[in-house]
Image (tube, rainbow, N blue to C red; front, side):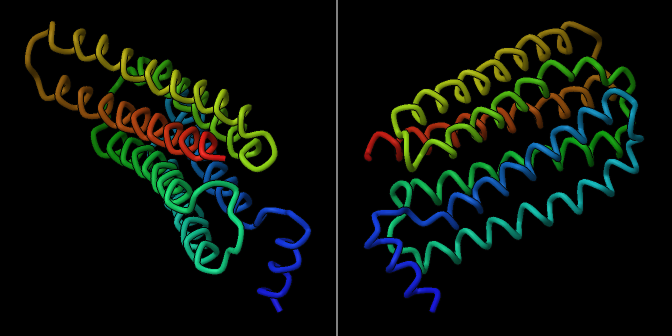
Length: 210
């Protein structure tokens, strides 16, 4: 019956909305994880609690990625090329994984003055939100999706530049265990920013092929 419903949508000229829904759910989990990390940096959530809550968020993200992969097996018409959809989903998963590692290592390392990481995380969130707009536009407004992806790409680039300045600051001081911990945490956010940029590339590539 599900396949017949998909065939009806195909004949009506509609794309497979289940794929878009799974991507949006993945992005929702990534954004929730990013805001949890932001609350931790601001002192609204303690590190141990953030660590535990991130596990549940990661579980949701993994479940939605698995749903997308399963939907791809049955989809008759996809918003963009299947390979680009898979790349996009994988990169979104990488964003959440990097945020998970950031929260976990913050809990393990106990680095003080974590507010210094807020600007990097703010750009990660901006990138995720731009990716949400891109995914919404993929099926009906591919040209707008390309512009949305460009915004996300710029946010990922901003994270990289902020990381470089942060790294320069860390390396200008005396070598210490604390400095090494700060470098590792900043590196986790840089990795999240890189994953945002990779997701943006997948979305843009797919939209350009429409």
